Image 1 (cartoon, rainbow, N blue to C red):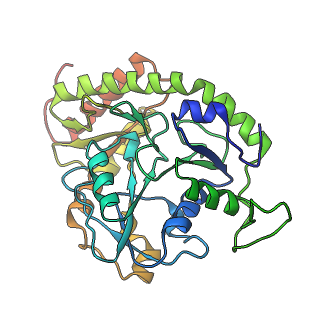
Image 2: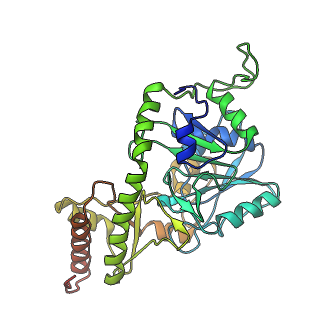
Image 3: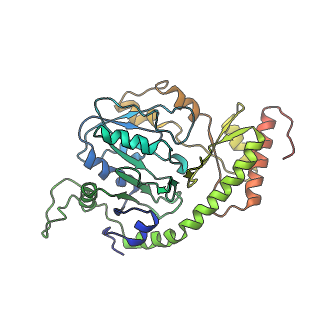
Length: 346
């Protein structure tokens, strides 16, 4: 194991990348070097969410993010990403561990016009589309190993790419901007220490061996939720299509009734059930972007409406079938009670 980030056979095998898998000290830094290589001047079209890399721009990169509207739901969609003559590339987020079935065509279209695509795969280790793994469908894929993610190294992340130019830049920036082809200690670009530690890498290898079991357990939980919630007609879950195998970092549902999420969260907390929701507020309404880019409420009305309503149910590898059934039973009970409906027997 090389803490400096030289090719790791197990990492490349598990993430099915023919190129390089480079471990980075902090997960957002796995996005930043990729941007550093590809982003000079112009706009960057962004899908839902996006990592904190944009709030802390990569050293030396110059560009402005251009946030895009959700099409109709929280989930994997890239058709709504707009481009202009100033657009240099796009970051597409695999929200909740879902890969958009439209992604391959979108990447091809972007490449034809000389633009790049980076996958923010922080939610999606092990997710697949058409037999291809998340991170391997574009110019580069970036993963997070933060403690709340599907697999963890305590902190840090990883970038995978089959492009030698991107890999070379990332390795240089991993080592404070060093010229990696020079046997002397020569620094050619501004950078910082992004090296991964041996201890974190050892933890990652242990987690990597467990990743197939983690994914199988999450998919089992999701299948139970899908079955029970579709029967209820009270919630519409985000579903995988036949060619997709999500990793289910999040299990996302949209209520068909008007629901006060905060009240529902408080009620379920009494049942020892934790629910939450992501991107609250949406990224374009974070203070840093409202101040620096002049973004405002109403700018992306569909996204704002959807993100104000969606709910994420608990999903993790240690949940039993009976736990999933209990979550749905209590969820439906409280929602129907709050909507003044008569609870129905499941």
